[in-house]
Image 1: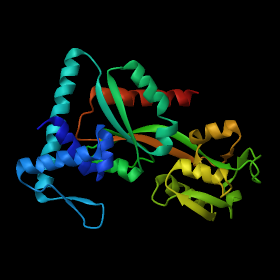
Image 2: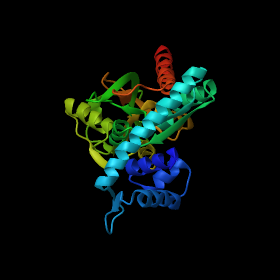
Image 3: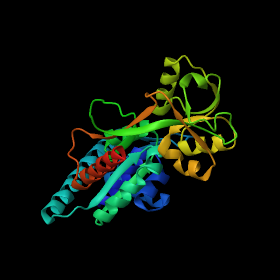
Image 4: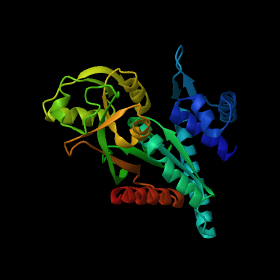
Length: 301
């Protein structure tokens, strides 16, 4: 039995998906199934159960014990590798980072490119997900770092706060507000909006600000990611409130009008989260340092 087999099993448990476990390990889904069958044959125990008629996976009692022990082995092996790299004075290994789409697609790429240029022996494994999933993956140890909007302090998590971004109003170029330089919250009363889904932190923050100003808007649609929201606004489904970095390309090309929101509270905080009971590896620390440096440079600019 090899370390890779334990990692495949843990990835399957944490993603609850044969396809995602296969993608994480650059193998086929059938190879993932084969690895699981091999483990079950070796220990003569059923480790996973499928829900009949559904695609859900559940750990058996033996599977839970095997998963916890496998996690400990993988962490010990990662610490061993990190110790050897430190002795050699190199920054290497893989940093697994989970992030939300709006940050990962529009703000992290320059930092990732700089990191890879500075530390060619290291690798960033970047995954995109909802905030709730990012937090869960950090707490479970599936990823080392999470980068999320509106990070919340909670037991077991450390938060490195970044300055965040302004939220802006976006609409089609032909919209009545398209040529405005600035909008007050009160002026949004009754407007038709394309919104993030209710459990997404940016949506909760937006709702809170609108309520504070006594504003009610019309809900045209709800989506779980920034790219779908932008496309919906482009085709005229409604306006939206989104982080400014996510619409710079559309603003430059003229596909969307971007209008500043006047009140100071229209700001989205961003932060890096990681487990407080674990020491970050050298590569992960370097990546966080680059995020902080990039954040400071943005502020200075």
